[in-house]
Image (cartoon, rainbow, N blue to C red; front, top):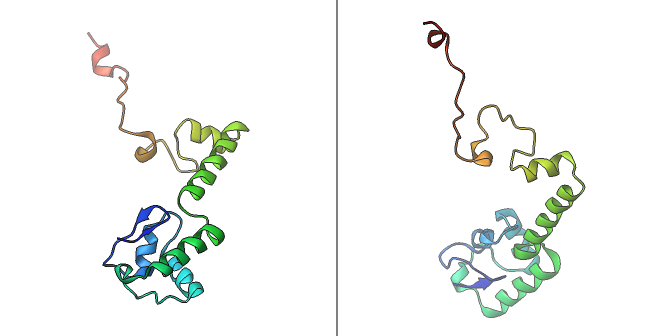
Length: 128
């Protein structure tokens, strides 16, 4: 398995698809990278020569924000929103949906497993 930016990419996939295993690089980004470096995007990642791997690593370091660099930038952006206490930052802090989704129902991915709260007593319970 070739190792690019600290990530093992699969041998048996086309290069542009295998590059999408990197955080911040999709299939279109992989195609652009291949064309910029003059590498055949249909080449299998396992057949990639060492000099091509080093060229890809160099290109990603200089031109494209990916992997750890991109993750760090996103975390810094979220931290800045939390620090200035804007609405989006408060939603991040409370672990609620940030982009205006409804929370009365749904939002289970963000809120976690449902926590049942005891309800009021019904009308039948009030009668003796």
